[in-house]
Length: 208
Image (cartoon, rainbow, N blue to C red; front, side, top):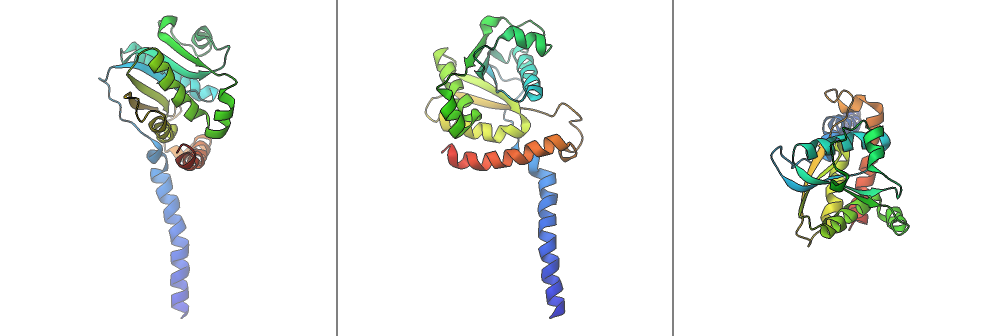
């Protein structure tokens, strides 16, 4: 009887440890979506907004893709009403080689606030992207965001454009600091991944 008790206790302790191990091994990888390739040409590169540090990395990557000829425009689908591309060039240390006529900015309005509150900014960015692409007669785009944000991003885009005949390809941006080290050793990034799982769970229900 005592042996049976210890066996159950051992299994009870082992299962959470296995769960933690699998999460550290695959937790960040599951959130990644990458169906882009280096030779694909599209009508636009869409850069989703993020916190300042990540926003800079996303825009730098989007500009790099544009300069490689991967897209004819850069779309920033949800930005502050006073946002200016010249500010990006100066503050994000971006080479000023992209004409402003090739930058399409979706500016946040009062009408966006209720939907952001209900569905989240990612969903509204996806909706605005579809609207801006239709307005400019664009048919395909590369979507750029942080690696941990890509799975929820794809869910949002799938929900807002099921019958729009637009093509989207997803391009993740890696962590800028020590990207080769295990993701869970970066405390700030670890917290972002954990937070993303909460948002992803909500997205499965709210976006639908």
